[in-house]
Length: 113
Image (cartoon, rainbow, N blue to C red; front, side, top):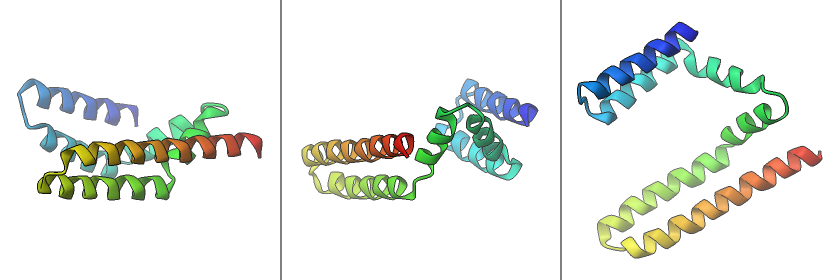
């Protein structure tokens, strides 16, 4: 898998060098990484780090965190379109604080149990 990951990194660098749109580069890299299994390899690589590796993977795979963050982005987009940009900053700050609290609580609970 290492040659595939290096090839993805090289293609991203090449795209940035030739001023290709970042969204196009990210989309192509994401599709290629999903199809090749590079994400699974990267997750397995992180998991083998003692103690902290499995915790990182557990935290990243909490669906609630992804759901809260996704809803936050959708609400932020709608509010900015309607002119509530100051309120969006407050809302996003509260959301990030909530997500950090959930993650810290999950890590502490995993260490205690």
